[in-house]
Image 1 (cartoon, one colour):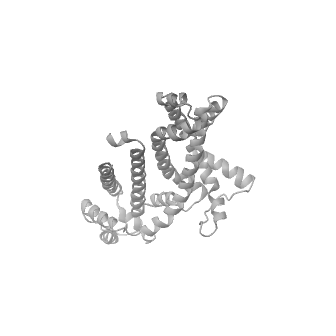
Image 2: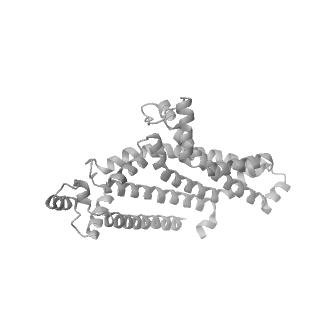
Image 3: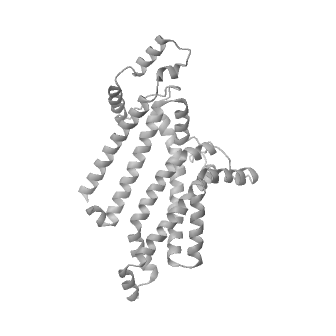
Length: 313
């Protein structure tokens, strides 16, 4: 197990380094005349040259990358080219906002998907058909469309929740729950649909195994078979899908945060991209990469603990 963990950690670190290099080269090499973009078309050549030297853009691209990567290892992503705000502070303050929405959504998706998937697999009648129909409908509905409908229904027509804004949980737990209710619902609907369907299929496959029939023939209660044996063996594919759901939620936060005016990482990335604030864009890319690699590492370790076959493979 120790060798398995070391391999996964090293693979994750190498992946982050590769992502940082490819992203840096692509963003900086295709950014055009960055200094002139910052100063505007009225700036003369001397001002553009001075700005390029100040930002280190007059150095070879590899030199720029190694300097940036060294600073990044120390937690320094530089400053915003337009607001002079430390990029690390900007990322830190907004990451907690995005994670609060995404983590609550993931918890709800996990609980509701497991319940619906297991019930649909065990009760193979109208309940199963209903879950499948709702799953297809949920997958077909785009998150942004669901978000707009929720705002129109529950923030404008029936003003139960705020349409925009975010309240920090330390300021007011009740206000925080109200502010994330609609965004979390918009994210959760699609997540439940796809995950519940997969869990249903995994549980049905396990229920068909010979050892399950043997346990039933020995008089083991059905509830014990489901909770102690079936769910454990159906867990690996479900965990993989949940990790993909989490990654998708992080990526989808760009649209959701824009609709609900939530000051999170997605809105920060969108605004920085539109104005060409490359230090913030690079910091967001690396933060997302670190989150994705960490989540995949955790899922690999959990799968390795649940299923010894994963460690062997």
